[in-house]
Length: 177
Image 1 (cartoon, rainbow, N blue to C red):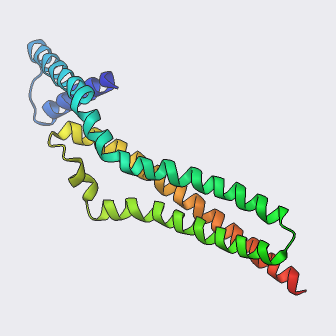
Image 2: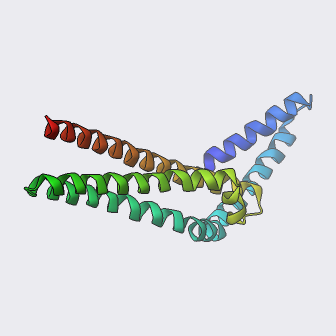
Image 3: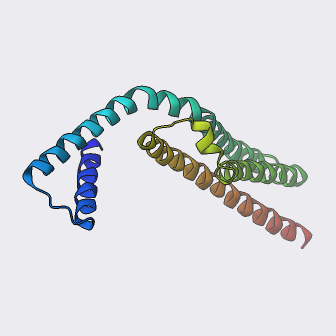
């Protein structure tokens, strides 16, 4: 990752020099290499030390939400499915199916809405508290991945809820006929 950063920084500096019509000599290129290597070494030390503390301290709440809500929803899927098919009473089957659909939808909505609200209110940037620009960019990319995974898991739970409601409606129609 740091090698990519070093290559990208050097190419950005060279393209900037080209757009400003600056002649790049061997001495200038050597100075660029030294500058880029210093920036990358600062990035390495900062990312390895304080960034991890900042990032883990901030995102642990959202990681915990995702790590708790999704497995609990999956356990709830398995348990309710087992109860629905084991239980002989049709009344209990319909009741459990409705409860499960509501719970899956609620957890899905939470996982979808929380990251979107944080991004809209710009709280993700304020809560990170990282002042240095390159550290913020790294943190932002990690947080965006975390938010995207939470949104995707929430959407998956909403799809499961829609499927369960559709199943419930089919069962209700079969029971009426």
